[in-house]
Length: 347
Ligand code: NAD
Ligand code: DAU
Image (cartoon, rainbow, N blue to C red; front, side, top):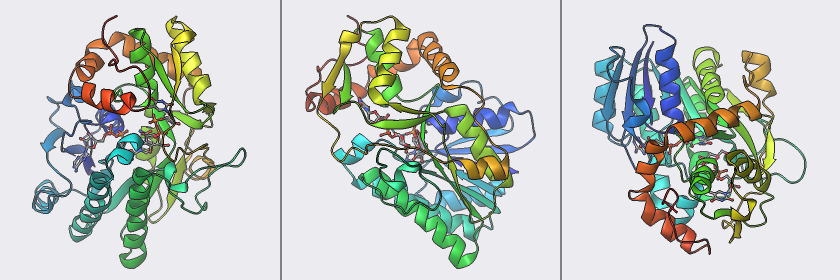
């Protein structure tokens, strides 16, 4: 297969490209990424010299570029990760989320269809379902009820995929995954942010009462699921992916602090995220039964590997934390009432 991966310089996309190249097959992998604040070629160190791999800096909204790339590379499969991915940023400024996530996906679908792409995986999210109460799980039949601008933009993209399949029989498979964690996650997201702050003995800003629940999945298990869907998923079908691992934020942050040997006094409750979804939990029985997928590591194991990775790769996240991210952090967390220091700052 000749695979176009969009957003391959981000957190999940870079883990996915490493998985593809690591299998030792002869597949061609073209990575189209705009390198926004979230894209980082250091995430792919070691892949550059691989003759099966090519990086193209560009925008999924650039029609001429996408069309040329699909034709020149003879692409027959697309795995679409590229997106604006952070809920808090979508509350601060929704427009780029509509532009990238909705219009970008629509354009990619049009060009992929015109080029005769045979398999297209849309990496959607469980956030399209909205929020759960105390009980129950999201199934693929749960009605979509997105609550944040981010989730609404992903739901629009997800439904465009449905429409392309329904209208033209375009072979698109959609995955809806829960919260990922692991190596190379940008430090704006909960787990890496808490690790970076804890290591610098900075306050750990927990939103609201800290009882919001997320279902955590190790990123490499997500990547294996996406790959299975690419190869064996049924066109037009949606697949939930989840870790069967629900945890309240406060319990997760406490686990991290203890593992890092820091004081629990660092935990600081701050103003809640506007419209904060209370609970996500995934029923992943379809992908388990139909494609034989299951998570390969326990949460304890995955979290240990993740913490070890951030300890061993301080330069990676310290560089990020010392750049433009400082302004974002001061703006976002200053307004929430958290201390204005940037994660990774020395004591
Ligand atoms: P990320 O923010 O780490 O990476 C996004 C990547 O997309 C970056 O490399 C960025 O440069 C690139 N990008 C952004 N706009 C682009 C554009 N216009 N053209 C080309 N490239 C562009 O995100 P992530 O956490 O790796 O998430 C990847 C995908 O998975 C997203 O679609 C997200 O909605 C979905 N998802 C994420 C999670 C999670 O827990 N992180 C869970 C479920 C689904
Ligand atoms: O569920 C899948 C989604 O998971 C993906 O679609 C998104 O791209 C991804 O960013 C993630 O969204 P969340 O909003 O759940 O992830 P985040 O890491 O931002 O927050 C996780 C939880 O932790 C959430 O309940 C908010 C809370 N939180 C987050 C941050 C950054 C805090 O309490 N404090 C924080 O500083």
